[in-house]
Image (cartoon, rainbow, N blue to C red; front, top):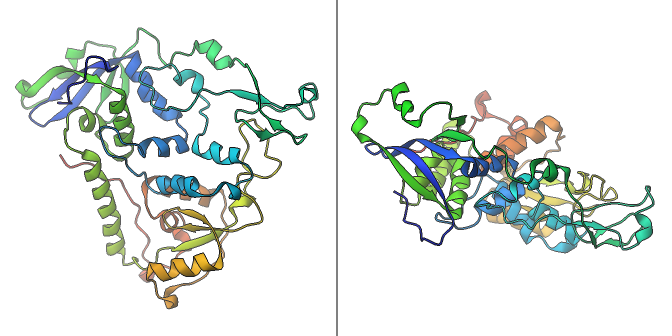
Length: 380
């Protein structure tokens, strides 16, 4: 069972139906506090997920596909490559649109400071609809050129409607399966046994487990890498994350070996990322600036490490990769919405994001296709 918690450590108590013979969780019976926590996982921005799983908890920190590499490369990039320091903060500490629902939930793991609202130093901008802006990040530049660093109090309509207390009613009760399917508890907890056939009923026990904030972070990690996160966190004492990560990496290499394309990975791509213009936190664009300065080029490796590009860095990368120059080929490709979605999917499940996300641009020997990469289930 999970390690004993100290009496002063804040926790949530869960009723857990366990198959002791197979050492696995069958069901968890939980109320509002725990269900709100699970549902809050769906509101976390990708940047927040990358930051959280990179922390130690009861388990070691983990990497999620190439998302963690991308996040770390932004951390390591100097501020001079961004339009403002605020742009870097937006990427590393993104705001959740559902903050008012999640801020007061029990055992909140996000850790992002509560949103503040900033307006221009020049109060005349407020009364001018063609100039005045509102930002959730300090020191954004107003259209007038001054910094937006004057704090104002702003009450979100979401917080007012929801009273800032999670997603489900206070009196609700739910049944949660090992793969985190959440269902309303419309019948007695004990009736679950009658709906399933178990070989050894004597091995099935109802136990109480206390879940702490570190356990919640473990659940987030395991939910991204395993189909049995409740068993992994509530029952297994060993560092299950290491096994999951190792198995996933081996799975990728095995696919590559079978397809015979291990030497056909995209080693690097030069991409004018600064030409993208995503909306800012206040609904307007950063004066057409996006996040990084232009015109400039960046080198993006297969595992999504982004660095400013130079002739020296390109030569150095190729030299250190050990790939013969005769094996390299330069291509110019067009990235549209379809390709962007493919890259996003690959980023979340693979450490070879560009190879898998842009596989349609690779020459495949003997007309073989790159196999899709599936997350392996944990062997019990």
